[in-house]
Length: 287
Image 1 (spheres, rainbow, N blue to C red):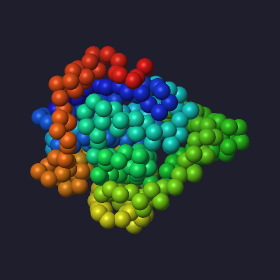
Image 2: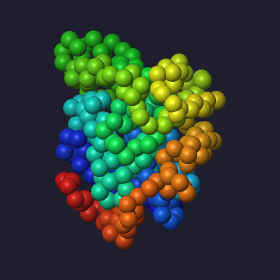
Image 3: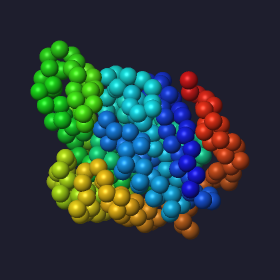
Image 4: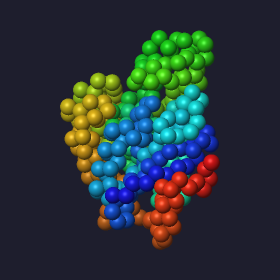
């Protein structure tokens, strides 16, 4: 496995910090991983699942959404739609420098984001969600009394996982206006729903609603005994193993690779791009 830091411009122009996990040899496919609400690319589930997938020949790009982790920008100016746009920018980065992603993976609210982004990334053949809410506005319960303050004053400081974040009214307006059911029904990609029956933050009924709304091909896997964040290494490894086997059927083409025009794939130029990024050199189109 080869892991490199990379960077690309996000939806609001700020540089987004990312990490590209490459398997040994030529990747069978490229995937994007979207992390959970206010988490980051280095959160345990994102790291373990991405690295485990490389063992099955799948390259994975995981990144911090605007205003989070090592990415630039102000979190207060972001919302669900900007997260979706960040995903589209990430796909564009892969398409330009490597190959377009054929697999989208999202954890929690990141799962809702990949469901929303699918129709904007035409190369995607398969989407996998982990512990994902049916409606993005499920996260609003985390705001508690601060939601009313945000609606009243236009913004409020909220403690999430012990850290302060500034939420603006635009976040509330945007996340409650998402046509998620329609997107799921018209996904036009294979869907894998992974969810723990004992998830303490996002009830498993959300998985049922996603699964029932989607059209075939679709699959559901119960992550029995896992917590919401997949903090146990065994749970993350199991999720990745199932994901990889499933992706082999839906995200790849005959012979274990998706069909590519001649000349596409990882090249010497791409290797040079990764090397430059790992040394802190700017990427084309970023600042």
